[in-house]
Amino acid sequence: MARNLGRRVLILALFSLAAILAVACSGTSDATDIGETAEPSNPGPAQITLGDGPAGVAGSRFTDPDVEINLTADVIQWQILDGETVELWGYNGQYPGPAIRATEGDKVRVNLTNNLPEATTIHWHGMEVPNDQDGVPGITQADIQPGDSWTYEFIAPKSGTSMYHTHSNTMVQLSRGLFGAFVVEPRGGLPQYDREYTLLLHETAGLYTINGHAFPKTLEDDLLKIKTGERILIRMINVGQLHHPMHLHGHQFKVVQLDGNPLTSPLVMNTQDIAPGQTVDVEVNGTNPGTWVFHCHVIGHVTNRGVYPGGMLIALDYEDHTSYMEEQAAAN
Image 1: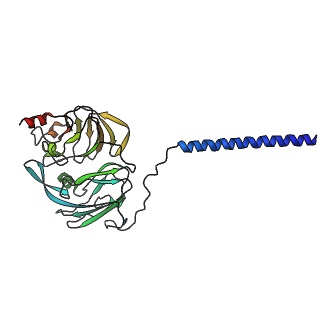
Image 2: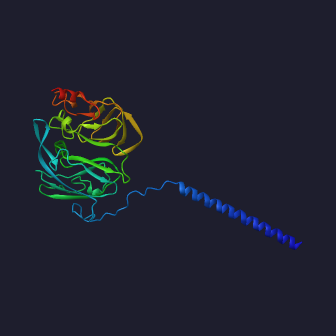
Image 3: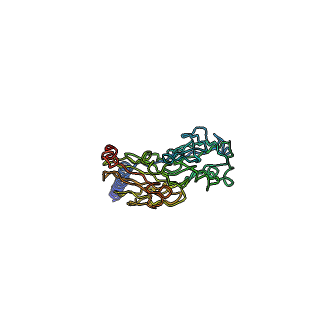
């Protein structure tokens, strides 16, 4: 009897061991399947520790920048309209200043030399930079005096459309043109667009400008080109002090980013108000061939000192379509 009991205990033990092994194998198989089908994680930009050297000195934060820009703040002569040149203040002789482009996580160095008759600084608008790189005189740094230089060093933060501009005597200096676009691209690259444009909206010397020009000069220098079937990205940056509701004829566009932040539910519109200091990114699909007006819908903003049309008016022009303007030019 004892022998039969021992045999039964052994059989039960073997069954229990088999059951445990089956469960273990099943768990291992499931984990392997999940691992094989899971999307690879995106580690994002590598974490970089900034140095703690003195602000304003090149190399005090890092010695190996990925992007290095030299800017000069200058008094310039700029042709906003054919036949009308005005005195402005710009970076590197330009109004607006040169666009700065970086990739998320890049080490960025900007060396500024002040050639203006008064002190100045640069603020990185909407960008999460260290406090002593924010460019506000008397709060985060000293003013950069005429003839002096200053270096800003920071890590390019999250991707998106932003800007840089003066933060000294801002009412005067910003109105005179001290600003530019700053675009940070995602580490994995942008969605595929056939073309990309950046429009900076501003008002100066009694004129309303897009990228430093007023209509009709905008048609010479800032025409938006597209072909049927293409998808383009337009970044709009309001560096002025007035609201500008931008309206595109003949199309709906998709608002995909506000202030450099992607929208989880993009808005489909044909008119988008852009507040002072705001950036808006829109996608346009080439579905309606023609030459279409794209303008601020405050009517006074599409005049040149009251003369209509003028100001903030450009056009979206299909390259695979002969426009009325081209027909008239050919006839003449």
